[in-house]
Each structure stands twice: as structure tokens, then as C-alpha cells.
Image (cartoon, rainbow, N blue to C red; front, side, top):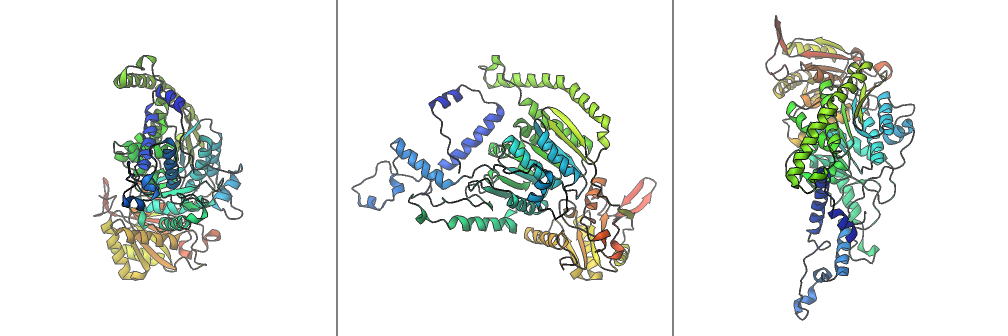
Length: 601
């Protein structure tokens, strides 16, 4: 457990002569809020209320505990009271990355338990290289196809960046609760594989979204943490206030104090929906506490393309704040438009550059308004000077045809934006795409043919109504036991149960050989199936959608290798295929979308 801050008069005198930057003021305010919450806890083992003038002759005073007549009249008494509370609150140490292998192969083998003979893919190797070798690391954007291991690349790079920049944790943010729950299990396995520097290095974790209490993995960690702390006995020590003392377990735990909607983000490792990060860009109560939590982490935002124009503005503002605190950020996407990539990189660098602005000597005593006026003027001048340089740097980079490179890494080194064209892994897949009729009869006929020898087929619809109709239609024909329906209108507990079952049946560890993968299955769902769910279909039927969403959905087809040349799949489904429906008819102006389909039209 870290020691409380102990500053003398000299340190406070020196601090009083300094003018805080906006970033420093935010972080200091967050620390003050934490201190206030700790000091306001009147539990018996913290700062209980005391009788200022106890009546020792009163018979009732003989029943008072030691806590009720704490000595608050002397510095020594106050110190004992503070030490007791500090020992009880048991704030965890910041995470300190330890024993990071110098070899990329060893790093991935130890952290992700690669099977024998497996090697990191090129995008993973290059992400680690950028994290290790960039002079002044800041933002890293990883663009690579689905299934290339972007998440593993990000976690490996984040561990290195945390060590290089002194960050004490990692935040992984995703677009939906379903994807966040799936990611939590993967991050938990990664955390358990991380070495601990010593017994005081807690790997505290928190899952942050509206239905986190329904996540079985999260609840399991909570239960294990409670069992550990409750097993510590006061008999092990003579100190009266050490009920929570003991060796901190090396496994992943939930901190007792870092519990709840506002304090959970302060845990060393945070897995959350992206709104937890975006709220750092809003004017809301205790926003500085959230910004303090993010400033001490490496922040990973997965599926950064999956947000509408409204949310992208908040994301850019959040990136600007993270840049201003020099917080390392890793963005992941398989289908990120070039314009969005540029906007995000420029937003991050805007904050980075603004944090370099020095306070003009004339404004030292000019008040907040004068300071703000001068800062805005300096920002305008700096943007005008740097804009042509930034364009020129992009032009120089474009000589390598970065705009058409894929996979590609985009990263910042101080105020420069750089690109790295990454060699494809050689893991390629040809997917045969075919437009089919939107009628019920055509859907039944298609699936009847595809499933002649068994197999697992996904049917992704653009609306809940179409998904419900397709599930009933297919259930009546093939049997309800072979059809699984999932969409956003399920009750939370049922939806999470559905998604956990899908990950178990169609995940990488389930095969026909071990009995985990069903012989025949039809999964009907909406967009909840298209992102960050590690499931694998033998074939896919999808409603027509924007091309980036089609690409995301294709990432669920033949996602995992099923034997040599896919021989573990049914013979009719060994070649990846996608069938696109939702078009009512074609005319001279293009397609007319079916009712309730066509991207929700």
C-alpha cells in the first residue's frame, strides 16, 4: 500500500508560489476529492466521530470504545488516527509493469499463451516495435483486418507504454455492453498472465457499464476478493486497526475502496463502455475524478469507427484532453475512414501542443480572465504557424501511398504524425458474396441447402422486427432447438446469457471434435453480432448495410481455423460465403430496400 503524502512547510511554501496549468489543476482537484471522501468516512475503523469533551465521571463513558475518545487534541493523536484509517482504506499501489520480455515472441507467448509453433503476426510485431522505439510516444492507431489480433497487439503495446511513461494502469473501452463483457474475460486472462513485481502490487480491476453486476466473471472476482479479505484475522497482529492487513494476492482483485460508479474508474485496470471515457469531455459533476483516473492509464479504444457524428465530437474532445495530459492512447479499427483517422490524430496533437503553452510573464498577476485571453491568443497564433507544417508532413508521408496501405499503423512522436505500412500476415480469405431474394421462401431454401450436411450459419438483420420474423420463420421450419435469437430488446440478464452461450458454442475453443461446437445451428441477430464478439460462422446471411458494417460482419465468417483447409467444417461450407438480402427490387436509380431492412430504412 502506498504511503500517504507527507509534505513539510517548505514544500507547501514552494507549491503556493506556482500557478497550476489547467491539466495540473484538474488532477490536483481529483486528488483533493479523493482525500475528502476518505477523511469524511466516519466508520469505526476510519475517522469515527469523537466526544470533544468526554465526561469521564459519567457512567455511560465507561462503555465507550477507544475510537470514541480518539485523541484529537495533539499532533501525535491525529497522526495515529490518520495511520489507522490509512491502513484500513487499503488503497492499492499503482501497477508497475515488470519483467517485460525483450523478444516479441516471448512477450506474446507469456502474456497470451500462444500455442506451440505460433508466432505474433506482423501488425502485432510492429505495434510492439512502435511502442518500444518511438522517441516521445503518444497516440497509436492500429488498422488491420478482423481477426488479426489487434486487441492482443494493443495490450502488449500498452504494457510497454505504461512502463515507459510511468502509467499505473490500462483502460479498455468498447462500443457496447456485449462487446465490453466479452473483452472483460479476455483482459482478465491477460491480467492473470502478467507477472507481479512483489506482493504489494495489486492488479485491481473494474468493469464499468450499466449492467456490470450481471457479468459472471466480474462477480467471480468480487467473490474471490471478499473471501481473501475476510480471511485476514485481527489475531495475526497486535495492531488494533489492521483488520485488512495482509499479503496482497498476486491475482486480479476488486479493491474495497475503489468500488462504485464514481470510484471504480480509479482501479488500475478498467474495462468499460466508451461512454466512460467520453464523459471525461463533459461538464458534469466529479468529471475531474474521471480525468484523474484516465490520466494515469494507457487508454485503449476499440472499434473507434463505430460511433456516429455526435459521439465522434465527444471522442475528439476526450482525445484532446488525453493529449494535454500526455496520456498514451491506442485506437483500434478494421474499417476506419482516412478522414476520421486524421481528425482523431489532430485532436490528440491539439491537446498535446496546447499543454506546451507557457504562461506569459505579463499574465502572472493578471487574473484568470487575462490568463485565458492570452492563452487563446497564443493558441490561435500557434495553430496558424503549425498548420502548413502539418500538411507538409502528411504530403511527405503520402509518398509511400499511406492512404491505400492496409494494415497500417499511425502514431505520434511528440508533435509529428507518422505512418507505418505493415506487411499483411498472409492470413487471407476469399469470401464469395451473392445477392439473394428477400422473400421468406428464398431464405428457407438457401439455409436448407447450406445446412444439408450440418453447420453453423449466422443471419444478421438490420432491425429487431426483421430478426424476430426470421427467427420464427426458421424455427418453424428447422425446429426451434436449432435457432438462436439475440437482439437488444432482450432483458439484460437474458441477453447476456445468450451472448455468453454463443461465445461458448462458437468460440475458438469449441470444435466438433471436442463436442463443444453444435452440428447444426442458426443464429439470428441484429448488429449486436457484428463487433468484438469472438464467434465463428460457417456461412453468413446478412441484410444490406453500409460497406464498413458489411466488412465487420464478414469478420464473423471463418474467423477461426477449423482443421487443415477447413476440413472440420461441412463440405458445402468450407469456402467462406456471404449472402446479402434486404433488397426488394432494382430500378434505374438503384436498389429499393425491403420494408424494415436496407440499413434501417
